[in-house]
Length: 396
Image 1 (tube, rainbow, N blue to C red):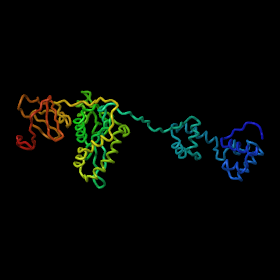
Image 2: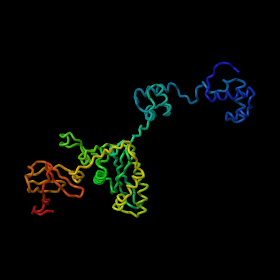
Image 3: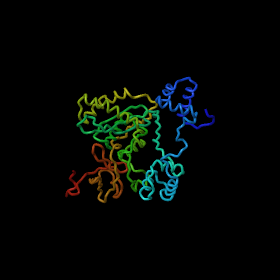
Image 4: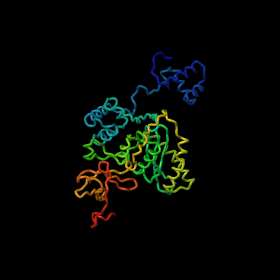
């Protein structure tokens, strides 16, 4: 064999190792072909080249020669010059399209141009990385964070309208509370949080998504700008009254615990509704309140890492009807009329004095539809009237 240093690929090194064993008569040519994955005839050819020319003869004969598909270096220089002058910053795909359309240059492939640009330092590989998400550890205390979300689903089976299960899950324990509604609405969210507060107390924070039920995307009014407040939804106002912080979730994975609990309900609750023959939202809520949620919590809830309950208990004088309501600030007209949502209310003097004209009052619409007007915390007596009617004294 010839002596010297030969640059080889790993595949060629494997061939030399096997053929050297044939040369030492440790194995046969047929066995060498089996080890190399070659046919017997091809192995005999390779063995003949190795025997006549040594290890160097085993390497590919085209090594070191110019490829038949090699493009003219002058073309490469023209393309790179044109790229620098006109198409700087273009990606290889778009640059190839532009070069072939208007520059009258011989066609080149996108990959060829990409290699040329990277070699010249005019382009670098752009790797697309998936966003990194670290699994968030559960909170340590019951009531420290509660996740709230709606789950639209054909709960009553195919052929029925899709309803929405409003679901709350404590982050530390997995304790859940749910109610069925037609859609994920403000009233449904309020009624569910109301039930949670009465059952467990006021949680410190709520984890919600970016739906306009929970967070407002409108521009702040002049009054909000002067007060330094951000726009809030009716649900956000209710949470502010209770001292609950709303935390935004920017992806379904962020509120994964309530999303996984949706899967539990979509499995078990759908089957329960079918077994009981329930076909309406009212029947579904009766099943939820009739022990289904308690059984679910006994099976899946876990103990928190810390035993202290961070829920805040309700005070005796706090009326949740004034918390979970639709609240607006309105001005009193010169004739002591308050207008809200195109309805007109005449204030009546009974006890004390009426608010001055142009002063602000608060109009609250409870979830049962009743209207209440307050001024500085004091409830005012009023009568609703139709301004088109001749006699205002007649209530509607």
